[in-house]
Each structure stands twice: as structure tokens, then as C-alpha cells.
Image (cartoon, rainbow, N blue to C red):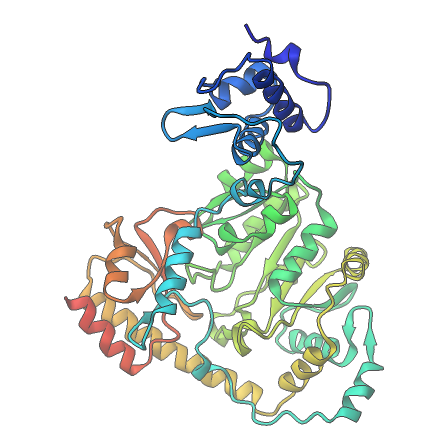
Length: 467
């Protein structure tokens, strides 16, 4: 009888010890060709290791031909295990097969495939960004080579100084917050900004919370940094504070990440009262807030709500970017953080060498200072409102069972209905949507981007939904 724990070689990593043990047992005929091994969970208990460690060992031995996995049956010794012929090689299959796959991967692949096969007939409500036709038209941005060389002399650790000044002035003029005792850092977009925050302030195994549903649910950043995530339900009254407090106590939450204005995917705006309640709870437990405000540009004057940053400047790290206005390839974002935190972020940014290109920063500054910029943003906001109203009218006319709250702006509608196969049903009609599981909810919900639905697409949408 095999004494698995006693016979385990005293080497590390543990998965390597398990592979050596099984190879030796096969060589010594203690494991015979065709013999079934204990289940992964059972073997993990016998060896006093995590199941994932056994899984990795089994994957390596399977790739080398020593074991065979039979779906629904178990793992067996190969009928012809060739120990002596095993080459000393890296098992690349482990990296391909043992990577934790995100639950949205199958959906994303089907969306990519549909777009690749499209001949102009798709209604793409699954898009993330503005269509090219709505991106503000700023004309020619004048930059010659000599001017670019001079601009490089104005680069500081935090970025291109004129761009920093421009962004700071915009926030001041809009009365969103002041930069007193704060550091403004230019980064390569909102996602890179979040990555920089996580890498600078947290360690592997730390925990963060965010709303559910949320586009953060499908972000690879948390897995890449080893950060654990805990979604907190978003209700009609805002974030579920009881659930947030429970998560803070149970999981030692280190950061709360919020997208409070035109939240992705629901399009909602947290009220001032809701923001104040969240701040109070976080302050009680000393939990900083990371505020993702990429849609803040598109809020009408009458709908503006003070940012978390303005309400508690020393407790909040603020993120924004230009990607929702000037296209997803505009990889310019910024971080506003308390000075001490800002210096830490700068140190890590420099160490990781993730500073955005100087040319992109100079062009962004020219765009923000262009005389057409503000009028074009006003025009964009009006166009988005018109398309939102048209699409919601079509939904109510053709699918009265669909439930949604009309957002005050942004790009997205969050729809709930009763058919769990709605993604496939709409895909068959060449209507693309982003299904709920991508955002941490079930298949009965989906996000629809109305920004790209012009008059012609609106006509097609109505016709297809009536079928």
C-alpha cells in the first residue's frame, strides 16, 4: 500500500515533489499501467497540499505521457508509460491549460468571431467605446519637430508639465476638486492607472471591493497582481452598505474601487447622499476609495454630483482618462492622489517604466486646449442623448418585457429580462450585446451600447426586434 505523505520527496515546489513521487512509483511498479490514481481532492488531502498543487503535477505528468485524464472517470497511469524516454523539458502545456480562465472568455471569443465575419450587417451594442463618427472633430493639431523637441524640456517625473497644468485647470474650473496638497500624475489610461495604484499600495493576497455589476469583474488586472476581489451588490439605493461592511470585516478589504458617474455597465449616477454614506462607512474602517471617473466629461450641468475626491480629498485616489472621448487608442489618463501617496506612485511608475509617450502627452494637451474642444463635447453629449432616447423608445415598443432605467448620459443601457438565452437569441439576429456574466451577474441581463446606433442602425434594430 502506498503511503503517499511519508513517501513524498522533501523538495520544493511541492508539485515537483508529487511528479517525482508518481514517476518513482511507476518505475517501482507500485503504480501499474492503466491503474486509476486517487481523485485530485482525495490525493491533496493525503499529501496535505492544496488541490491546485496536485492539479499542476497531474497536468505535467499528462503532458509527458505518463498519465491519462478521462473525462468523468478520473486520472490513470498510461498503458505504456515511458519513464526513461522522458526529455528534460519545460511543460508549456501547464501555462496554457492551468491559467485561470475568466468566466467571460467564451462570450468575448464569440463577439470577436461575429465581428470578424461581419459584412456590415451587425448591430454592435457590445462595443466599449464611441464609434469613430462621434469622436470630437478637432481639426488639425499643429506640432512641428522643433516644437516637439522644446516640449520634451518640459517633461517632469509626473509627466508633461503643460498637460498637468491643463488638466488641473479643467478640474478647478469645473469645481470638481482642487489640487492643493495633491499630486497629479499622467499615466497611460485608466486601466494602467489602476494597475499602478494596485502595484504601489497593495501586496499579493490583499483584497479590494467593487460594485456588482461592474466592468471591473472582467478585468485581468486583479489576477495579474494577485489581488482578491469581492463584489458588493449595487441596488436602486446605491451600493449595499451592509454587504460592503460585511466584506470589509470578513475579507479585510484594503481598497474600495468605485465608478460612481455613469457606472459601467448600469449607466447610473450615485447621488450625493449615497456618496456621503459610502464615504462615512469607509472612513470608519479606514478604507481608501479609488474613484474611476472616465465618464465625468459627459455629465450635463444639472446632473453633476460632487466627486468623491472633492468630498474627501485625503481619502480618495481619483482616476480619469481621455479614452471615452477621443477613442480607445488615446492612452492618456491621470491620477490625482494625496501628496505622500502620489510620491509612492511616481516611484513605482518610474521603476516599472510605464510612463506614456511624450508625443501622446503633447497631442493630448493640444486637444484639450483646442478652441473646438468644449463645443465638440457639448455636441457629443447632445448626440448621445438623442441616440439613447431613440434606442430606449425602440426597446419599449418592441420588447416591452425588457426592464431598464434610462441613464442620464454615458453610452450604456443595462437591461434585465427573463430569457437566460438572450445573448444567443440576439446574436442569431446579428445584434451584439455584452451579457451579464461578464459583469458578475446572470445571463438574464445585458449591457447595450447605444452610442453607435445611428438612424440606419435604429431602423434595422426595430425591424429585427419585431421578428
